Image 1 (cartoon, rainbow, N blue to C red):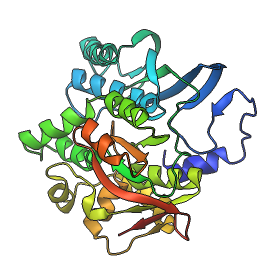
Image 2: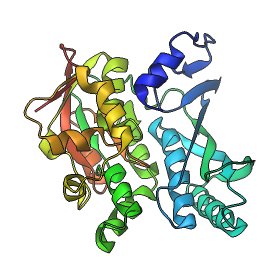
Image 3: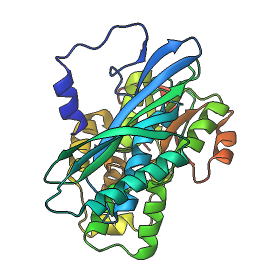
Length: 322
C-alpha cells in the first residue's frame, strides 16, 4: 500500500498513549519501540511480500533481510522472528516453500537471531516475510525524529532495486548487474546501524517501499527540518537508468511520487533522477543523519556509504533537491 493511502486509512484511528511506547506510528517510523526497563526496549516490526526474484532461496534471504532492516533502522538488534507465509499449494511444489524458508532461516541466523515459529495460509500467490522482535537500549535509539540542522545525510546502499527487479522479471538485466543488486538486497544493515550508534547518530531510517524521498519526508516531518539532497550524488545500481529508459517501471513509484510531489522542491532534477528517488526499494540501505564532525568517521566504517546532502532548519519544503 502506498504511503498516501496508508496515511488516509490510519487518520481516523487513535494512536496508543501508553508512556512505555517510545516510538509508535505517529512519525511513520520503521518499527515500534516499547520500554521494558531503563536499559532495555523491545523493537517490533513485520514485513512480507510476493517474490521479486525467481530463485526461492534467494527470495527468502531478501525477504528476511528486508524485515530485519526495520530493527536495524531503530538502532536495535534482532532477537527472534516468526515466519509469515501465503502459499499456492495447488500451483507450486512444497519444495519451493522449503527453499524459501531455508533462505530466511539462514539470513536470520546470520543476524544472530532465531526463528521460533510462524503462520501459513493458502493463497493464490506466494508471499513471505517475518515478524521480528529485537532489543535496543532506550537511550541509544535511531529514529526518524532525531535529525538536527547541520547533520550530514548519508545513504548506505545504492537505489534502483525496484526498477531492476522489474527488468529481472522480464529477463532484461545482464548477469553482472543482476548479481550486484541481489548481493545488495541480501546484505544486512547491521553494520551500518552499529556504526551510526558508534558515531553518536540518533537519526536513521531504512529506505524501502516508500522510496528515498518518501522515507526522507518522514525524517523531515518527524524532526521538523528540511533535507537538502544532491540528486547527482545519490548512488544507483548499474543499469538502472538504461532499464528505466527501456520502460521498466513500477506502480509503487507512481504512488510514491504522488505522495511526495508537493513536499519536494525538485530543482533541476531530471526525469531519470526523479524516478530513482521515488523508486520503491526492497531491502534497501539506511539513510543516516550524522553530525558534521563525525560524517567522515561514519563513511570510513560503512563500505559503499555515500554522503548525499545536509539537514537544515525547516523551510517551505520538506525536501530540496540541488
